[in-house]
Length: 366
Image (cartoon, rainbow, N blue to C red; front, top):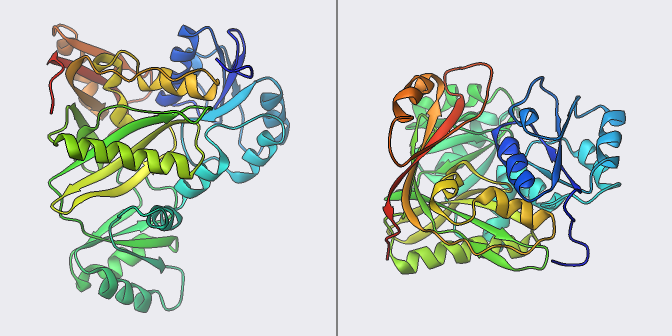
């Protein structure tokens, strides 16, 4: 470990108290590190396992200052932390991954331009100001530029299929524009792909990069349903996926785990988006690899050396969404099924309640 690495007993602050924060706190505890969660909502899942929880709004400067003063480094489990809160925290304690990674990922237009700027391919795109008096004309220009079908997305705050609508033809454009409710938006051209894959990679404080094998994803209603490893891609494509993740990590001078979603097309891999944090499609690492993505992230932000991301099993991770939680008693009787429930107090349609990773056998692949 480096001389400025955290020692057991020191504290990692986590912005956000959802299931990702919960799993980070659990991994930190295994390494002898303490965690302090900052979360506006009451009784967050991460609060059940963290050493300390602050329940306060991100605009509460006094609470933020006290939080920052009681931790040794800060990380986050979701991207949409207000800039003002980050300003206050960063003046007192390091934030890892850094602010640039957050700023780029928070805005889909900025993200696409960043990716293109470092030589990575994306879907064609065009900005759309849905609040403009000329919004209809701007959208027509965008459709001409990227073609149809296309997807109109808000530039900020969209996730799990929210904040986006598919446009099949020009007759759909007025309703699509109205659905943006005046938000800054982006029109993305449709990409014909054989499969979506994602790669979970990490960059340590020393600049070393470690990449888990890509997983193959299946979505339902815009929400990740399953991730299977190994993905049905050849060795060359697998290597290219890791090279793409490394290019993003290095360009951002990143520290921590990143999730990069990719489309596997007839012309090679195209980047869909990246998340500057641990990622749902990396949950398979809990049962399929020697080290999971959560410990790898804790190691990175704490200044510890990264571990080799060795996969020992073929696995398939399935999310429990909403009422899927009713299947848990039956799954608990399955051999080779590792359950992880998030402790959420309320079950709602479209809400991720937990996941199961099924071990399919010893590791195979190209």
